[in-house]
Length: 207
Image 1 (tube, rainbow, N blue to C red):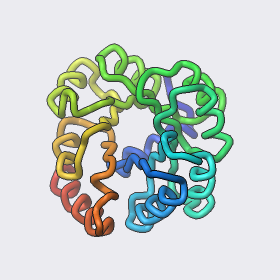
Image 2: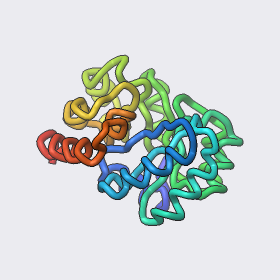
Image 3: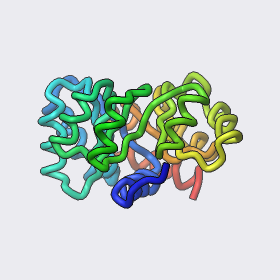
Image 4: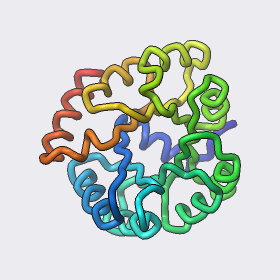
């Protein structure tokens, strides 16, 4: 299935970013502070998550304060969550596993849906529709991604789950479209230094 021009624009931003911070936080206020620090540090493609209490307001606040950033909502497991994400300005929607209801809502709204899966069948189906999320990626590691890409050449796959900053180059070298990284990139005392380390690693890992 071909992506629309609007969906391609967001997919291209994800591919260009190469790293997508996946943000979990105890509440929306903490999430907003972290998200804006990440954007200020240059990581302007973010995945907020529906596990954060008050996430609809968080999505809206980050979009309002960082309008040039690409802000997605992850851990979407229902159609209702997808609808609320889009109503609050999410630029893309991410699920941890196949969610047909959310997929249909995103398609109707012409919004990119990054659908999760772990088996070759799940990943292949999601990649055929656009961009797939490999979750939890740490189960198979970069070699698993290589194996999947050997039967799905050119598939756009974003591995996420259990990936640290230092793991990123190996995933990019294995063919990841982009890499989702969780708390390792933002939980450090010096977030900005961690982002600088990540930039150095990405530069060394793949041009």
